[in-house]
View 1 (tube, rainbow, N blue to C red):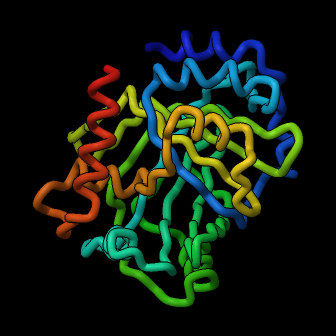
View 2: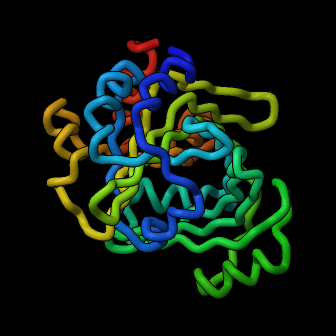
Amino acid sequence: MSVSEINEQLIPFTPIRLESMDRVKLMNRIDTKFAFDKNTLIRLLPKLESDYFVLEIENKRALAYESLYFDEATFTFFKDHHNRRSNRYKIRIRNYVDSGVFFFEIKHKKKGRTDKCRISTSNFHDVLSNQEDQLIREEVHRSYDLVPILKNGFTRITLVNKNSNERLTLDFNLLFSKGDQRVALESLVIAELKQERINRRSPFFEQMKANQLRPYRLSKYCLGVMELFGEERPKANRFKRKLQYLEKINYHAA
């Protein structure tokens, strides 16, 4: 299923411009993730049209994103996530391709809430700048011996609730890479509902319940580590069943 087919489903949505997104920046929020396939996405989109705007940039509604993730060589951040540490971080450079901007971003997960801070940066780079190191010291209050671990790319639809402070991202065409190694999960959709506080009466939550789809916790970074590193990564028994489930969704729909 192509991006153009998905774009057809987005035509009826009322667009929202990037400059109008301030009310749903939600830099401190609760994230709820779901996983399903592109066929389900096609069925869902018409049911969301009346409740959500769609972000449009340069006449595009399915937008390209790229990320470079950093971790220590011992996979500190990956292990923190796997071991369910309630206070954990992800650090990345993200390229908002269609906006033409790069940000250095720190995501802090603490007691179920996500706090994100970021600064502008220039392109991808393997060695962090003094300004980026300073941000880590200010936000994390410790230093890490960080190295680039993997890149990912994906296509994203961003929907904005018309009536509440809520944003929904729908990511598909996932590609993970390190060096010459590539793993593509093109039919998997990772949905992330971003809210100030959990509201299960959200139109998207209602659709998930109607389709018997339950929240599913696994970050794209951890998914990429699982797919790319094999025996090089730490043991990750808790993630194996999740990985099998996500791969089943992807390959069943492909």
